[in-house]
Length: 262
View: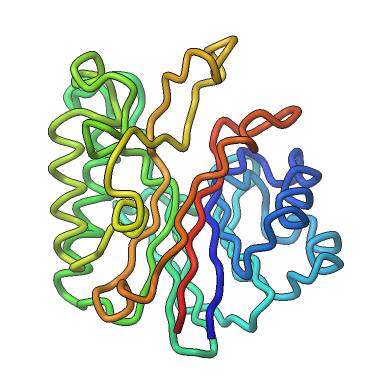
């Protein structure tokens, strides 16, 4: 049975509830994974989502910061939440569908402004978080699993608007890209978006600082959908809904989609 999935850093689910409802109405993924919800779980506006058909949710929340949630039309049960790097942040939630597929929803630390852990603790936290993810995947190889979220790294040269200019910018530095690759390899994760769209520039984030983000198009692909090899061939129809970035009072991220025939 096919199901569609989307991942979206919403940058406050309460502030942008109307945008979430609009996206659900227009694109209708069966499962929506949200990051940076910035809300305690009990204050996530569930009534509107339930009215739209999303009657199931697993989530971890914090007041005004971080937060991850999985909204689903399909029955889903919580399958764990990890605090990698012991930050005490709500950055991971896992849910399991009735077909046995586990969905991991991550919000990896952004890493601050300076790509040097000696002078920027946040950059060290980011690398440590990814390293602990890597070690967990080595210790317990995931199966029949999907990993999504704002991983805050654009790994490929065509995942950023200018590879050379961004080599020293957090999210595209060589050490981040290498650490992410190690994390991906540890779980044998397949990059579904690039499996379906192997060539060409592809972005999911455009800075608020750019007054004309669409024309300037200085984007980065920070949001990802991965799957384990046992189900990766069942994935298709990947796309990024760039138009959503242009809605009124938007998140600086656009939602990323894929469909799985399982």
